[in-house]
Length: 253
Image 1: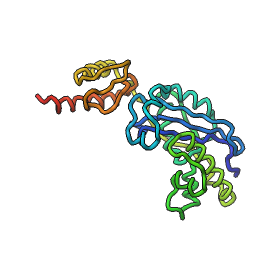
Image 2 (image 1 turned 180 degrees about the vertical axis):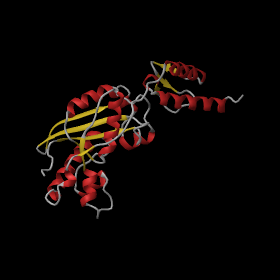
Image 3 (image 1 turned 90 degrees about the vertical axis):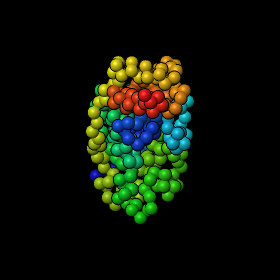
Image 4 (image 1 turned 135 degrees about the vertical axis):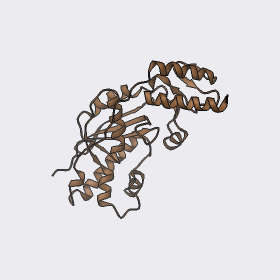
């Protein structure tokens, strides 16, 4: 079997590790033809909330970078147009795919793809190494890497794949073959008008002021700015519960 040399290498940065609750903040991709980079794609994504401090520290991405960026529906359309029907490639690819598929489902789009995972390849041939993280492997193979930025990581995954293909492709081709990517997700229900009305009332009670639909906490009730209109029904429910709990704690009857 031939080893794929045409693909789109993908990487994303997110607000956390769980696609059920966390959001994409950056997408990076490279289109590869005959083993060479033909084109690149890179965009910040507005997650509709403040970035957790640990993510700012890890990625260097700031609220100022994403607050005026397009929302995921707009970025997703651009990425899907860029990637087309290509095989995807990435390091621990199911992580990136799960977030993109969730976004696609929420935008009422089908997104079923095959992919090649450099982490899986590394586990097949590099079990003697103490780690098979992208950062460690890039250091091991002397691949330049500005870690935890989407486009840089996508380029690094592509470069790593080419090295692994050259060194081990003649040994066994199966680990290099695309596999169906499987991640099951249901479309999220948007925030309801009643939830939005209640949240606006609650934030007034907590002495929060409103600019557009971005809420900035004046007291320590919620620890982040939130774009209420972009919340899902479940996210709104959790925020309402949090606000009510804090209200009872701060103003006991």
